[in-house]
Image 1 (tube, one colour):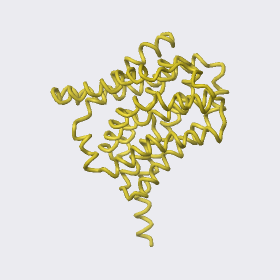
Image 2: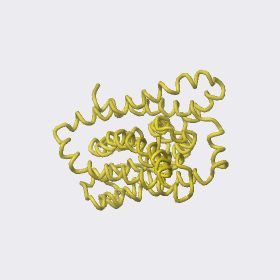
Image 3: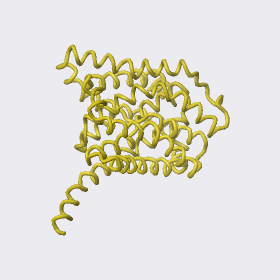
Image 4: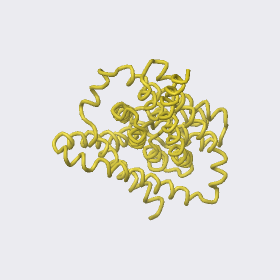
Length: 295
């Protein structure tokens, strides 16, 4: 399959299905959790929507990658969470309910914030908001149609046909991971000759951003006296990004292959670092208990 067809046609359809699957796992209780656990939800949303882009910008300024790669990494920072973070939270035995709630909230917010923040990024890093064509309103509508609408449909299906929704939720999550890797492989193939240079230019910045945001997310959660599991969840939610949505913006809406490089590299790195973060977080309570016993 040609990369152009994969990104322009298959990617939006696949993301629609992925978000539909997310809706299958959501109920109104997930949104009521905002009132039941306001502190945890507010800290998580703050870290995802504000802290993450700020750290991303500081990392880009520090590493000074080529502007097109820096913009790509910034766009990724505007797309937090997603089904991947839910899956890692589940495997890490974190607070899955909090993870799902945060993903649901940011999935509604990001179609409104991505176009504006991307425009600001063009001005700041490229010195020209017209560097790429990004109509604000039409971009919002596209993102809403591909991300928010299917979540709503999925929630309705879950309410009317819960058995069907529950039986298809997990397969869709695994398919979303498989599709993300397929898209990344297509982008890598298209840019194969320059791939080593791209890794050298943006790889270190992506790694630092990923590790820093996970650690800061956890530390801020603990500062607000959240539980260890809640802190681990917020760390995962801040460090694990929605690579599929980022690639939709860079590859489908902006139609620029080089903008897709940074989200692709980050997406590959975050699986390894996310897994390591989960292992460390699960070891910490046992190590603390052992230290207490010895003392």
